[in-house]
Image 1 (tube, rainbow, N blue to C red):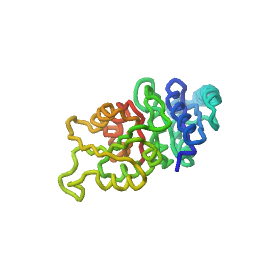
Image 2 (cartoon, rainbow, N blue to C red):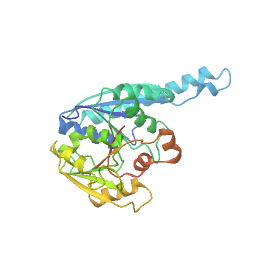
Image 3 (cartoon, rainbow, N blue to C red):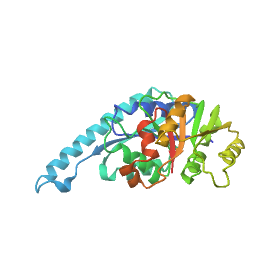
Image 4 (tube, one colour):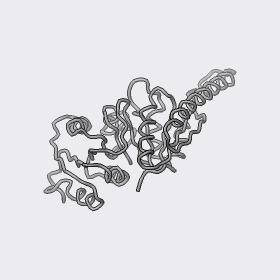
Length: 279
């Protein structure tokens, strides 16, 4: 099994290069097809303008979005054209409220969606909905790539954030091509429960399952020495020189994560290595 259909969604060029580079590296390694969806985003809210202004403002915003889409498409075609992989690129315009529909449609027919980190400086309001649309509505796994991350074709060390949850197991199953190719997979269990069927061997059953797929596993049981689980995972990733983190996404509702924060949001804000997520 391999990721043959790879997709990235671009709404600007400044922060898109890390995701493009990672997508190309994977396409080269797995003989895949790299696809770029280049969207000019119409951010207007025409319902709030005074009477008579709608037509003029709508035309202006649509013209601007079309121009942005053409510029992004040119950037993607130039980058992918020099990569040596099979590729395609297409542009279009989407209103910000309808962005998820366009992303989900393409993600549904992709093995993996590679996207830049949605949080940080110079990110548009559309960055977070794109990640969520790919996962929730497109039902595709997403690899979120930090700006400073180095593209890899074959991961050396992968961390799995294992909490025995349904989301984590789904991400692990979708990440099997990466896990099988890795030199070492470290199953990270933070403060395992004192009661339950796996209390005497945390992560043991997962390790057994993965080993039957040829995955080389180690289990790291860590204490919760920091307030946020994401901080512990990120520190352990640095300590073990990991190339990627695999974790389930949005164990709580997206609304609760957006207001109160959560492991998914914190990880996407702080991670320095690519994060593979599924829900």
